[in-house]
Image 1 (cartoon, each protein chain N blue to C red):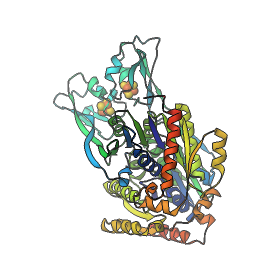
Image 2 (image 1 turned 45 degrees about the vertical axis):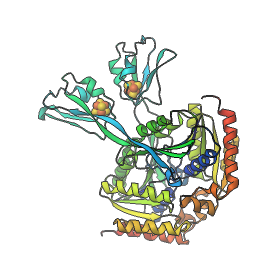
Image 3 (image 1 turned 120 degrees about the vertical axis):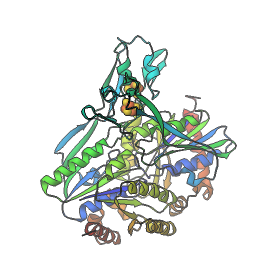
Image 4 (image 1 turned 90 degrees about the vertical axis):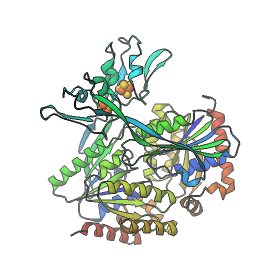
Length: 289
Length: 289
Ligand code: SF4
Ligand code: SF4
């Protein structure tokens, strides 16, 4: 079963929830328990854990290389490229691949009738797999700096779990492509929000998106007590369950800031996370796996 | 002059700070480039003067009256978007990258491309100038093209209205939309918070800024939540030749300001945090003069 932890807005406590939830359930001896850090632009989960690297590998993308001695400057590749990644000026015999724009789709290679295009691999980032305990593993997706989209790295990280067991996905913020890629594979989505107007606006957008995708979801309100009541009214109205409320607490904030898991210090929370997890698995766990 | 406010990590208070900057000086153009979670309109309730459709990308769809299920497209698609579902060729909307290759090679001419045109850009007037903001439809690729469109519009208005300062509220992360937000701006202000993950994200964010040779400033928000890490961040900036701008205290009133739909200078003009922000903006505006 896959559970995605997401939030429209960044910084609401997605990582806090993912890491503490994973830690709490990893002690339950569940076979094949994974935490996947899908926030590939800014992966942070490993700050909270010590784990041995089991393996790392690069995620690559293909980009075309044009052999100018064979190129006739016909412009077919430029025409086939739907991302404007090939610049061509036939009159001056100039052709150039703009690698930053290339998505590696291969259309230009199909287009070229003169066998002038070959491909090379460029790295988009790395996947690291960490041993946590004998039944639990952490997989981290890390996009290379300067790369445009984290999506290929995220896909590779999710694939690395083998799609079996209990998989916690720490999803990237927002509701655009990287978020969709992450939650699309999930059986259940936990949205982490905070009770502020910004939080509510982003929450609404996430809820609407999940509705169109037909994904069941519940909400964790983080830093409760700091904001207003609108969020409760909204959730009530939409019939979305509040799974947990984490109060604003300087101690929790301080543990988090130091890279510590607060469930280790506030033991009762470990139980809260486990019960929340159990009730989700009970209700939604049988749909797959 | 364009001043972009960004933060590697979300939720650091970036939007509250850009909103403060937008109401601290003479009239400004405010460009909300956090198109995935545009929030500033909540605080400013701008008028709607203009709306423009943004074409994000394309998706492939199959016309089953023409498709004879040969499966050629399955082997061409590099995004694993086409597969046999119940022995029928099916395109997954989530996975389709919009490269158009399938549509080009389909022998039955059964695949066509549709534009994703659900994203919009709005222009309006708010209480201290003009505002431009984009709204990315859920699931769209946040390619930075919408960010560019918002920035271009902001610049056009700035010229027409003879307004000098453009404040840009940027997206989280370090991917394509961030790169689009910061390329060519005069100043980048990175808002961070004192946590290990904050520091981690800051380092990645600074790295991307230095790739583009930008005048970069750092603000630590909620700095007193962990003075030790705040010191570390400040030291890091000094040793990397990054202009350190200021430390802001944690103040629960900031959330109250937001709930009352006011910015910091409007809601709490005499607070320490407002004085610090005013001073910070002055330093930026007078830099190099
Ligand atoms: S591989 Fe695709 S995206 Fe890259 S240059 Fe060729 S056609 Fe364009
Ligand atoms: S347009 Fe490209 S990515 Fe989309 S289904 Fe066709 S081949 Fe695959």
